Length: 353
Length: 259
Image 1 (cartoon, helix red, strand yellow):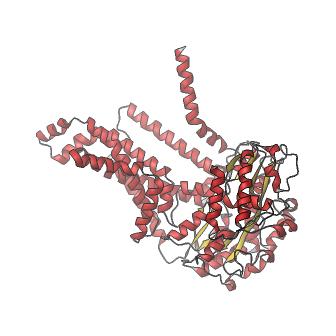
Image 2 (cartoon, helix red, strand yellow):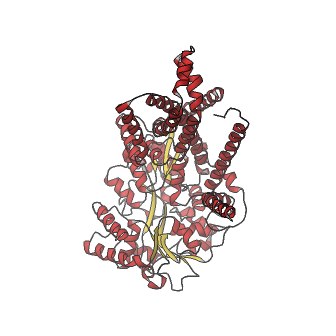
Image 3 (tube, helix red, strand yellow):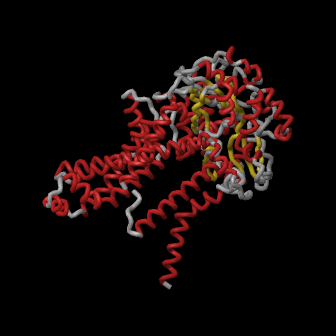
């Protein structure tokens, strides 16, 4: 027994040492912090081979997790991928470094529509990574009305078969938009009406969920649910299973246009190398490969054109390529500032009422 | 009649316990990524598992941390348990209760508290801080597993050994430790599972360098957990079953236990 213990211990110590040793040396290590499963990981190897820079790639599940990790300190990150409202919050809290676009020449490939957006008005801090909408994922066999408006989520005909996203911004946003208000409303009366509508909707809702909505609808457990366009794209690209009866409708009243972006937080150790990495991600070949793996529309025009040639059918889908009119009427989330806690309060009341 | 009822009851219990694991294993061979639909058999997820640098790295750290945390906490915990056992009166009760607090404390409180402690001590969050945290929350379980064995111990055997000329440390090694070994082993197993299991405390005490499997799986929430994780869980489950079988075989033969 003693011998086994000793040998186990030696092996472990040696392994740990080997590991810490490899971390030493003068090699540049870029700490990249991204959403889980949100990048073609072979691109990391490609970047490492091209530049000799090592990438330490870690993942998170929500903007809030990422923000908490960054604010806690104790470790630093060089490149992170916050969504729109998180970008404006990080700008407000002075957590970001301005990008030097001389080091990011590939920024010229980014669609002009996706520059200077509300969350980063002068486009000093962020580069768009992927974008999409929120809308209604539904089972065509179970829904016989057109899914092109928010009202359908309040239709008593589908009572007990409607799923709502358990997210304060998405749920409040849908309710606000249905009443004709902005998804970033800070008008108390508008917010009260939106909350009332959500409370009224409760008796129709089968449940409030996160990423399970996709599976519940795909399996026929519910007729429709509020979710991201990306969830539908996952099902759409799945070649091994038949999801032809699942569709995605984007309400004509307009919806939320979401962006995930690439930024460099304060505390970054290798800013130049971080910018090299961002430039690499914007390279048309890389952006194309990444977008084909992830299955979301790329904000990179060259990559997008190539996707259009390769997958013309996807561009017929509202989930992938919504009409310009809808985009016109849609809102990008911005940081709500002090209204953040009011939204949270109203939403909590909906859930517990 | 009674026998069949017992059998049915047992069957139901086992079904309840193992149904999730069976489903998980079955879906690790499923062609499609989406849960709940069967699209044909494939071994692709197993192949992809070993190509995924994030998963292999997280697995590596999970196992290393678990082994180190188990070793350290088992040694420290056993020594503490022996110490507590020979204490008396108020201080013994006090220590026993203090030992229970970390067990009852919500993980998130422990996690945040440890993070604050490490940061205020100026430590960089990473491998070392995560290991310290794991050792810390494992020790009380080891103590709780070892103490009952010490209580069963006949205190006269150690005394007899010393009467016959054994030094206290010799008596400890040759008399006490062999007697309480089942307690030490179950404490170590407990520590190992707690360490592999832990998400909350690890999450707060790790930095940008190290991430374990539970953190990695949790971060997949946005895009859905991939079947590679099912494949990995299947392999871990099979490993544990094989290990248990070997241990049982050995103890049946009356040989020494593996650990």
